[in-house]
Image (cartoon, rainbow, N blue to C red; front, side, top):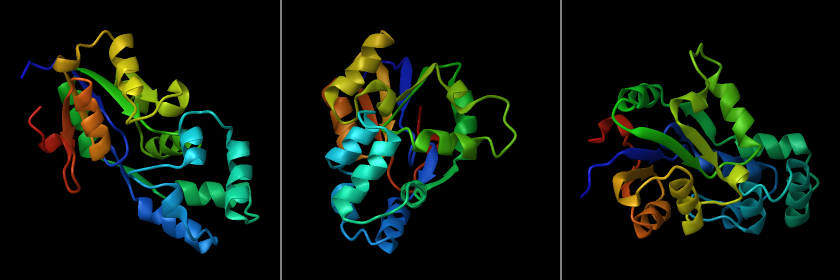
Length: 204
């Protein structure tokens, strides 16, 4: 195995604690009985893929969500349920990023939509910080800004090409097995961060 020069981190369940069940439960309380078929850790239907790749505006997402469910929910109700999964940042993991900086080039690659980005940034700044969240990385890549999402190979290749990274010298850390396998398929060293694991526990 080649000596790594860069690490690409996922966000949710890696640096930011999330709970998909909270969003599913919130939508169920609003009358959405099949949310798992629409979105989960493992998959997303066309509407949510479009949201995560920036192909649909927030306003149109709220409209389409009502069309798909046959309900008449307000944008505020949908937004609140959709953001229910966002919990809190892993403070020790953030500190660990600063320890890694002298040894590696650091990047973020997250399937994240335009609704969640301002929400988790607001959460991040609830504490006194000496830098923005993106300041931990050379660059933070969000699927809704790239128009690409994991586990599509093009998503990884975009980052590798733009940053001139050698796949074999790049570590990728994610909590979803399908994303880890896809990273390995493009030649990266990939680590699955399983439940209960933290990046500061990894031998990096």
